[in-house]
Image (cartoon, rainbow, N blue to C red):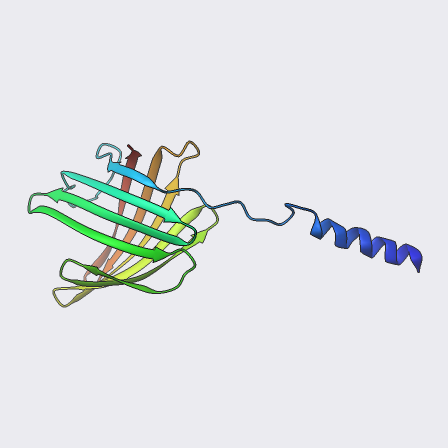
Length: 158
């Protein structure tokens, strides 16, 4: 009986050791990120002239300002998410974007949808940060009523 108690105590203490089972902190995505057009892939769509993404991250709060320049001028949008998967609504040019963000291991997944000229666009973004923290890759899968496409955006930290 004492051997059985000792065995259970040994097994139980393994689960209580400091650091055992603890998850690593999520990557720090904060910073100013500039699009690297040469490493990005916009598929059959023309790439923008530039994108600058300013990201702040505090606890589960992730805020970003995107400034994109293209043939039709400059567009700026601000987004705020919580990385715990709770739904949020952000105001964007032309309406609202509804979405949620959550960590999947060391990758951030952002699901969003918005109405554009009466059409629903849904998007799933997977953010991956390199180990050195200098390159952010965002792989996006976009769905429209008339089809789906993928976009890969690579950003360099400034």
